[in-house]
Length: 114
Image (cartoon, rainbow, N blue to C red; front, top):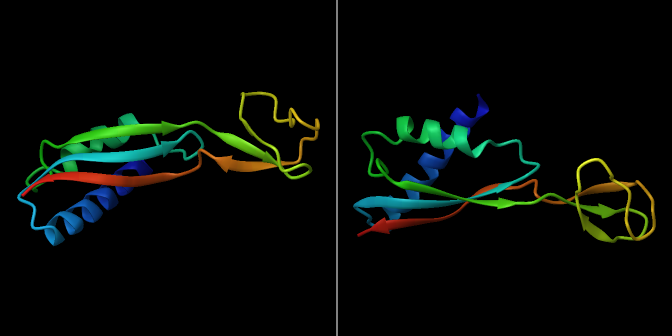
């Protein structure tokens, strides 16, 4: 249910920026969701229609760019995609890895009518 508070935060950010730009209406929000972020896009979409109601963002479209997970080997610094079960570095075979991508969630941009 943390998507509700996330969605409310997205709305506050979008409304603030739209107001600063003198926008009459927000038409689209472009969001980046990493595979490791723990954010479920369908839940954000579900809550969006409720929280945006009665604002200049009502009826706006949410567009999600999904970023795949990647890891970086702490032994040889090689970055590679997360393939599910195997977390060993394909370069050196070690399993000392950290997330290198796909853990982000952010509002990339908004589109407005002025």
